Length: 165
Image 1 (cartoon, rainbow, N blue to C red):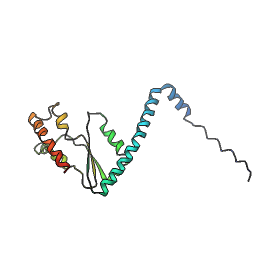
Image 2 (cartoon, rainbow, N blue to C red):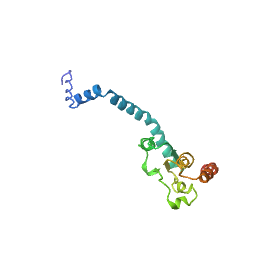
Image 3 (tube, one colour):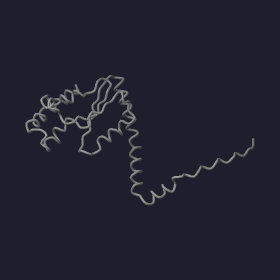
Image 4 (cartoon, rainbow, N blue to C red):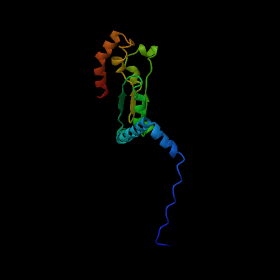
């Protein structure tokens, strides 16, 4: 064996190099956006790791957790939920996005449709919109009556206190 090491083989030329250079030169805004997105993804990793620890804790202690995501239409709630849950164990969480209430649901206690989706022991449920829609969105678009709104506002604090007992 010789004392000299053999030179490492040269990497083959990148067939896409000229395309990449073209994009960098012609679309700097696109490149900046992509870099910014990658940085955001990296910033999420410690939070995703914390969620894994939390999820395991919930499983081991047979506890439940509800996470609410609120925002306007097209605000990015669904995308945020996908990024946040990317590494979570799918067996122990669910995403719930309730649609327009059915006639049967309209005749029931307002919170009933949410309670039907609440987590079981060891599970986390992430709501893509929640009961707060009744306070924030429905009155603005006349999706509820003034009386339904008032009933909600009178009952929501007690409802939430019952959740943490």
